[in-house]
Image (tube, rainbow, N blue to C red; front, side, top):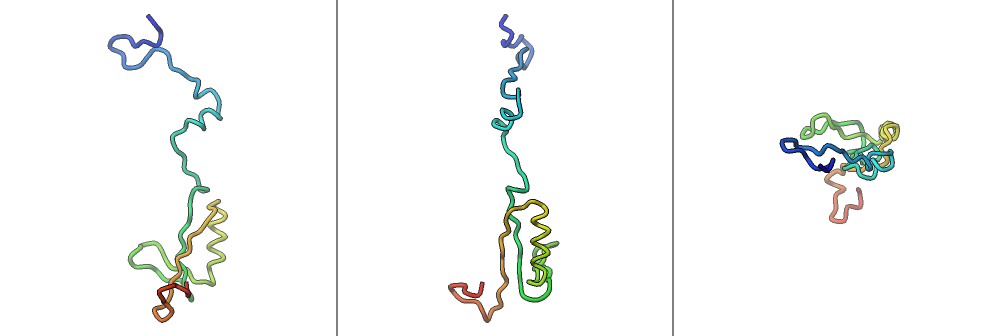
Length: 101
């Protein structure tokens, strides 16, 4: 009987092929998916003035411009390579072309 042919009643073959697990490079090539801090983009909600909680997003707040540098330094320390800025613009400064943003 061929060693890779399953024995009646067994679900798996008697020989396990290991060529894709032989070294780290091969394992990395056939890995299904990975997620690392370098794959992330951190959203920051920014406004003039002091920090302000966002009622519709518990645990998230708008960051004042005076604290933006500290926040970005913390994000960089986590190895997150990018931030997405979402500025809050007052109603008087809003326009169809978003110059104030």
